[in-house]
Length: 371
Length: 156
Image 1: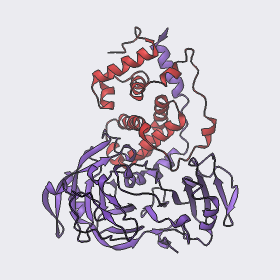
Image 2 (image 1 turned 30 degrees about the vertical axis):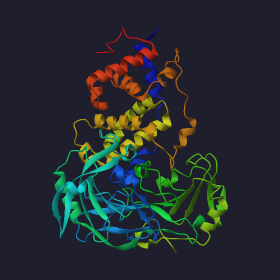
Image 3 (image 1 turned 90 degrees about the vertical axis):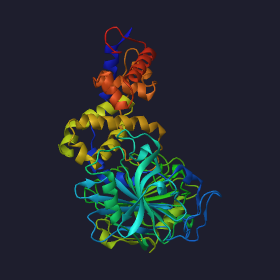
């Protein structure tokens, strides 16, 4: 006979096999700020799934479902790897910015923590504003905006579940307006289940006041490759503009892949870029050390490197893909390939030949991606 | 309470709890790490709660429940010790192997009930459901495990 005592003993024995958590404090600190930016609250509405985008290249063609209203503009305002959203001068916030296909995001931080708001900017033709336009008209700075709710797809992987929020399409408080460039700017309550120190409308209005849309700017990164395998375009960038708690920086870049903004687009795990070629660059330190337990086993463009096509001890190797780790100066560079038939080792060699690198312990030397 | 103090005091308990839920030490580490990462982002609020541990434990629970729907692809730094992960404990009646076959919600209910000592009402709060649902989970789980209920007020 099995008793509840047996059950408790079994659970206790299992719990006793837990790890000692070595290194977790550092990993948690390094990841904390990144979680906010990777919160994948998806495309503005499930309807937006019907919108197809070719906006990843400058000559993008935006196609809409026949019965969707045509947006005010469908002219791309930026090239891949560029941002048009930025924080206004004099803002009390500091920001982290990134882009994933047709989406730009910007997360405001104030001293003492982030506020749970998120700025999301949709390229022309990729946002269905009909729901939002049913909201209240408000004034933000010198322009009109809408205050209401908008459908967003909240994904567990980005943190939407931790306070009881369920996965799925949710209506979240939103302030939004269409910029004269044609982009839709939204400021959303990214933590709708959280208690607030001030009315959420006040928070979003305050954040919105300091959002600017300007000329396209290149994302600044510490690595510059003359050649990207297959001439893939950059489709994802999440670049630290503030140091992590440990004083380190990190840039995550994705190249190629379909970044059509379906509901699933913004679903990936906060550790997932989910593009055929992924490049993570970080300041050498604890985070990098955790990935380099395996010994150096090769060279890449003359530099000592770790390259894996199968199992590795300290870094995950995508099935059928590869992982490459290279140290250059103050930078640790991890390259992950989802399909090594499409991007073989030789292509990575070519990519690193002629590449240039900035310092990774300071943002001041970072420059645009292309050398 | 500062986050660092919380980590120092509660990380082992959270890891044990997650390991009891998951049965997989590596997954438990992932679950706890992700929950704590988000907790740190919000620590200004969580740290002022009367019971931060209960709140973070709920985060860990939700993270555990959500993971089956998740893809992991990018980068998972593995701890140096992962390769030496000990095997699951061997109980006389192979109880754990049966426990591992339970749906995750049922496992959560059992671990919270027996290991964490929560009442059905408290478990219901963690899971965001009614206490009757909790009792249903517990009943089905224990029936599956063929656990004799007489010695405990399991279905309180």
